[in-house]
Length: 164
Image (cartoon, rainbow, N blue to C red; front, side, top):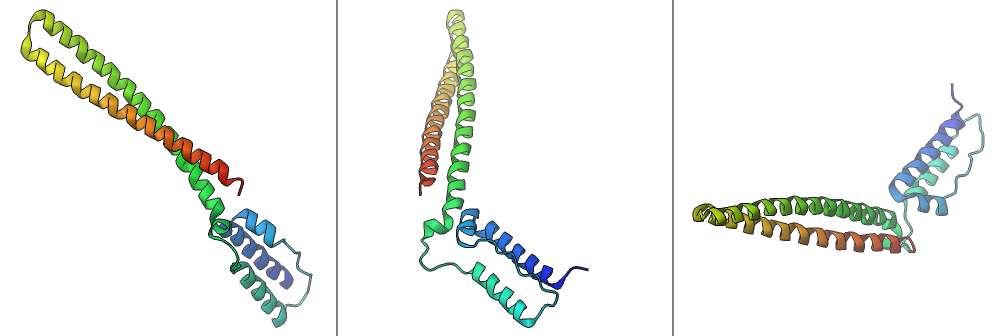
């Protein structure tokens, strides 16, 4: 059977763990260092009341804290995750633009063949297909460029947030 003081120590460790999970590691490390509870063979009402008071102290936040100091770890994570996602989607858009360029080349070659064969209905159809694929290439390239810019801006914001 576990000692009664061990239960209080476990309660304090669990509340410190929850504080780290909800408020971020840096705040828990800076403001609330871990103090080993005194060993005691009997749990009294005073010990339970002091453990409750300590856990209430962990749960409260200082009024002097700014929004950034409370949420900086969450915001940093968001900056880096969105920057990485944006870069990943931009890479995908680049491959889509390459695929559309290949399709445009096929439409262009077909149009050239239909001019040589003097098949005007198929030539017009190839020109329409070529124009659509050129529009798709332009769309994918613009998306790629915008996503790369967004990834760069968010990455720089994440790096700058490490300084504050």
